[in-house]
Length: 473
Image 1 (tube, rainbow, N blue to C red):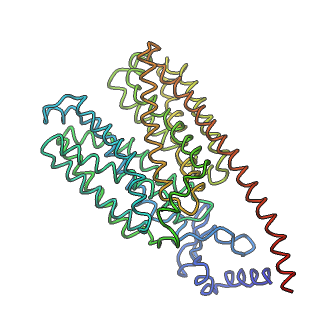
Image 2 (cartoon, one colour; image 1 turned 60 degrees about the vertical axis):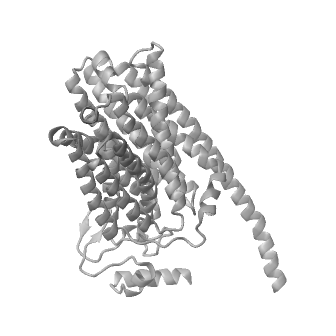
């Protein structure tokens, strides 16, 4: 009966009788619109290509919530990540102007960077926990409203203290937006595209390093540092309108509450995934924090060439993120193992390549692609492990990334202070990547044990269920 029903359903699609399927599965749109296929667009009806197998039957994966293969909601979410990534890092290039205006030292002004990082670590899980009974779209809208307000506070700040308040407020909501936004991104696509959807959203952060940060720095140095915050605030308004218009509304799941969100933290596999996140991302900051003296004192670049190398590093990140997303959708854990091995291998290669200008740039690009490739699989792994209550777990992974932000530069600085030279943070990056791989492998082992337990429980419960059926008969 199931086969005949599938054949009838496939026949209806082929004959253009799409009304029933549209109501039941939401897979067919208005006639006359294009069919979105994997490699191109042809005239006809719009069909989500993952919705049907070649024989016309429905696949087991759920249909996309949007009509298009890659919903426009992902653009809005990625643009929000771009705004947050820009405001997080751009302040570093504006510290001299801020220190002069407020009459403070540059190290004191540098606290605006560390204060932001601390705000993200605390704010991401805290606000996600407070919003467990709030629909994701409503949560994203509220977070972006506060982000815009914080940008205005920073732009109008009369003194250092008020500017710090604006920065911390921005960080509190920024971390939560990225964490919840990742879940929302995965929610608007089919099961086989979730990691790629997460990668698209996180590309906003990568592109911020290539475009937003240098652009914001140039704007601030030309028109004054306040203009940068005004620009970010305007961008936040655009994101807010995009989220309101494009992100579909998803009601809170039945039974969702803070207790259910907290319950997932009892899963040891989740903490192993967090360890892989923190140590897998730490190599990026271990190297980038000290990249200027590496390039000038070791590679022989001039000071003026450093920003261009950083841009190329960012280009590598933009390349690595979507590639990892595609691979993670096909094989999540093998992809995670592979990218972490690549992080360590490219770090070791960089130890030798950094002594020559050409090879240094080439390997820096590869290293940038490798560290960015860590993001989609670890984020997807955390969300999969916390299945059923992903909001708080996903937001907490943003805290894990920021722990990596702190650990990498700290250990890299220790090796330089110990007299091992400006290349020593590269060795630290290789070791951190190896540590992340150990966490990932342990996570894979824990996954296998979990699947075995689930299978065993299912096997023992089935005979009992069959026995009850026999008794009833």
